Length: 350
Image 1 (cartoon, rainbow, N blue to C red):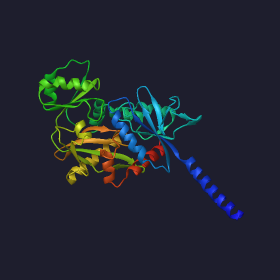
Image 2: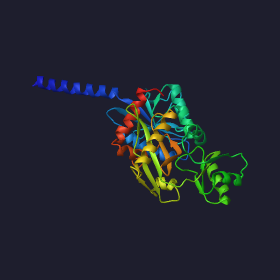
Image 3: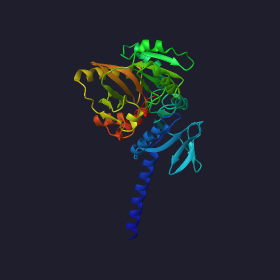
Image 4: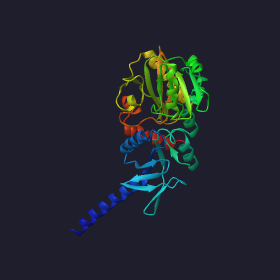
């Protein structure tokens, strides 16, 4: 009897040791979310979905909420302050460091390269592109200027800084009416207006300048709007099935994106030649910009030709977001999508 009890004890102890070894092998993953922009609320939703879908057998996930004033890890209903000198935190005297950062911050400082530069200095792997690529793509004017040299089709545009004198007649003569007025560095359609009359241009500029000190004014393109994700998947560039955007509003604004006021059709209802042209230009943009990790680009078709609008390097990651929709259409689950991003970051160099 004693021998039997001893064998049971030994077996259970071996199982405990094995489980402990597995726990020790888990990578610590920081999911950074929040940020300092008007997109913070959306980022928190994306970060929560990433946290819920990370493989618990592979990773120990931590939610890291970042604001202007505070960086903290939220775990088991407790908050622990981040030590910014090495991006670590302490629990009961134990210092915990991160093996990789999953970037879920839309806007600054996650999408404009600031955090990526910080992580690069600390030698911490992250799921985004290097800081220069993040900064470049977040600046719409600079991104368009670079891509124009590679023959990428795009709308006629006019750049304006807050300190510049506004000549509405000059602007309209260049871009025409209607036109779009948008902050140069902002996402989620915050601050964007569609202008039909010259008299309404200044009001639209004021709305955009509330989000950023620089504004981009673009000519209106009439055609089918699509969004297409390109990711680094298992060491290869993968172009995902595109999504067709059919907004119930005048354009794909914030309400259309987040309040269900649009129809998002994946895969998009476009012709074979349109799909071919779109895939080619989406992959070309990813390559010429030396992107890594996630990207989602917006286009409008003029005939069979896709015209580039902008690229998003930290796209929404909720179940309803466009890139996860496209991944599902390609047979990639959220867990697989997020696992791949972390593994690519751990195996590569930022």
